[in-house]
Length: 456
Image (cartoon, rainbow, N blue to C red; front, side, top):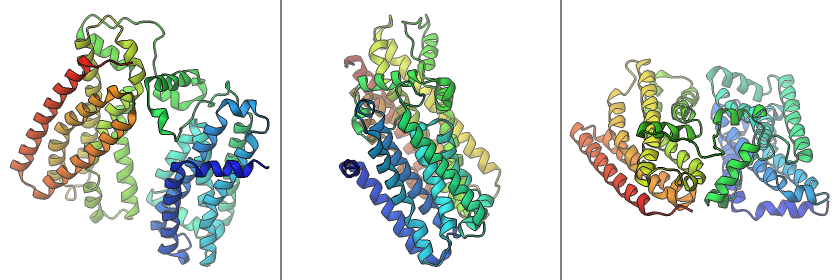
């Protein structure tokens, strides 16, 4: 085990480690300050515990999978053992402070361990292997915040069901042991070998990196990967027939996207999850629902734009090849833009429709005027966000697009909240018109840039 300390130190060398450590320390500090003697039964402790254990456990899984999913793991004798031990040590460090703090306050350490350890085990298994394990890890965050389930889990954490806590701990240990066995025996032909979530930002840059990523995804066994069956990335091996008319070609470009209907539904699903979680955290009080709905209107500004971000990023490695198709560049640029804009505005429309449907279920509480303002402001804003992402899509890196999306979201949210605060129809109309004009001008500039740029 002479290499164990070297492997442990490799975590310190990555700047992402310090961000995760800072986040974990903040959650541990908040957990301790909120109430050591609450026995974990207070529901305002759940975000701290679950986010700290789940997020940090996922970060450890990313690091371990990246280290073992390389040729060195197969060529260097004894390479895997210290890396697996280091990952298990970090998982232990992540989980144990929470039951220790509760035990110091006179609470049930077993109860808290029955919640924290399964979350860490699911995070480790889901992020190393993907598939249904990742689905269980993701949905567990939603289920634990459902009011009835949250009450039962609070009683579990308070030590009222020690046998259930013990069974959950055993299940978590099984997840960890199964994942360790997978990591110790996997090779290039093992389904899930190429499922990696690298923490190195360099993997986001360059069309060759994106092509390698998509090639690796195609190598996976789709029959054993729920994620790939949902995404269904389609990369033609030969030059396809793209159609004679403009709309036939637009339909072809849309088929080349990664399962566009999932992209369209994702913003609405995420908004519904946010509302359900926040509504559950306020104990389902109707008088708090209005604040929850107000606090999620900004999703109309950001989430539809992620459809465009995803489209440019996933398809970035194919653009150089598609430019060789027998299509004029002017037509190619316009049709690509329309195909992505259709998905983006469909996602925006589905999200707005789901918001309206949800508000209709709570008469007297729903802020209809505010929703109308949000629709008027966020609709034209999508044009501006799309043009910005299209302009940056030729740089061969996702980092500028992500930074631009964050900046555009912050600006758009500020404008939206200002219009809601003023509650003035003329001001809303003026801002919406100005956003539409600015978005149209940005689309023209992005179009001219695409006509001149060389994509390599």
